[in-house]
Length: 178
Image (cartoon, rainbow, N blue to C red; front, top):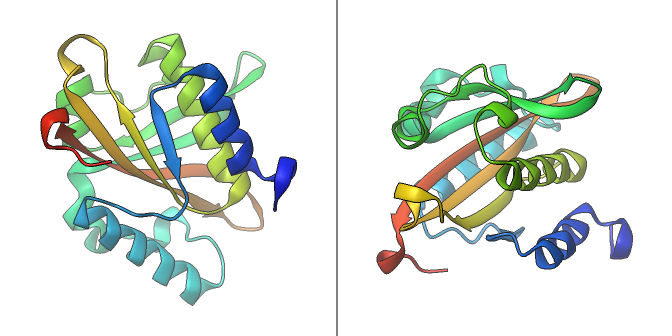
């Protein structure tokens, strides 16, 4: 897709207009080597399957090196609108944010972050390809962190994808490269 029909271009425009503290990189130019390795793993599975990998295609043995940094969010309908429920949350994420597994985004984050995450996840599922997201945290104890995230759509058989697999690594701002 190109122009105004490109969901990634639309997301970037929305990010600029909203002033969200996140950058989208569809080239997947990671600073974190683990994210490059996970992106390669996802791509290899997608090529082998000739489809988006499903959650069960990426088993625990394959994901073991990344588990502490992983999350899975699933799009659900709640009170007449679309949102995401966290189905899995790695221990690094739980250390920063508390245990969020099973909760809706609205139960876990401030409204400005919920809006940003829903927009990013929706775009990812629509584009059907992985994205690199780099964001800053300016809330309380997290004001010194840069988050580098690989977010990947997961297949849903013959139905449109509804789940996002993400891996996030945090770096102190004074050590981060964009």
